[in-house]
Length: 182
Ligand SMILES: [Zn+2]
Image (cartoon, rainbow, N blue to C red; front, side):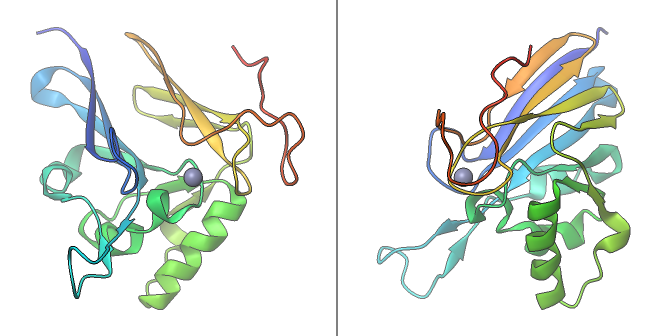
């Protein structure tokens, strides 16, 4: 069997909120997985009594032995809001830039979990090497500090995972888009 590269969104693709994306690489019987973002969406009047909604993580919990880590693109709730709810069933490393990591730390404090041994802080424009995935952070502009796209290189090709962004040549906070990145 040949190696393959898979993209499997559990939430967030084609909808607003609760982003939870999976990438896998390897032979079908030996996929290695990464998670990109673990967010929530907010309930409205159609679901009375419910405050937060997040994707069903059962699929990836079943595969946690093959899970290499969680990469967070930025600190909006629809990208990190479910992390302290789902992580206890995964117990893998989390990779985030400093501002996102600070907000994630607070979420785990609320649950009385010391996440520091698992929280790996990555510099802006930094690299994350997770098994067959060689990930580069690409600085974007958005409505929060430290928004990143991900250039995910694998032996089968390169994927650009954009995260959230807008083209703002003059952002009030943060850097301009790293448009020269190839
Ligand atoms: Zn956002």
